[in-house]
Picture (cartoon, one colour):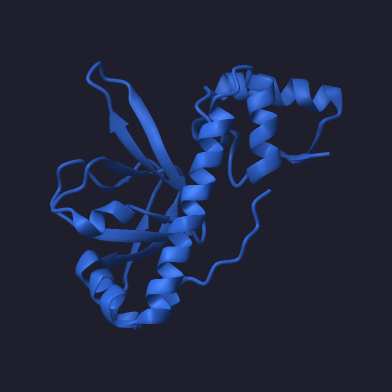
Length: 192
């Protein structure tokens, strides 16, 4: 499981530069095409970036839970390029792209913490891409639990690795019966 500690660049910003948000499950934080250039840090709950394909399928392109960020690319955009939807009740802060760009130019500590955070996220996404290339749902689920743990619900775990909730639940049941994972609470699993 990846457990590298990276300084929170948002903690280096004056509180007045952070705008709090709070949303309920299913609520949009922002929508594709909306003007806006804020990056988000999730303090509680889980958010997902979602795109809708030409044939109407919803594709989760990223998720973030407590301490993680989303919409980093928006600090250099005029409008959002996807929807941001709450997968559970969530709260956090938004920081305008103009603020981030200013601090990147003028505050070396912020810039280093910000780049380190982005580098860790790139590493995690490359690992997630590797995991998603595993064809068998059982092995894909086991690899995800080994590398990332289960940060939230089975549904969120399934979406993060490109499986349906049903396929992920079957894989978890198989892994549980094989003794490769243990149930640590209702709907919560960990590698044995």
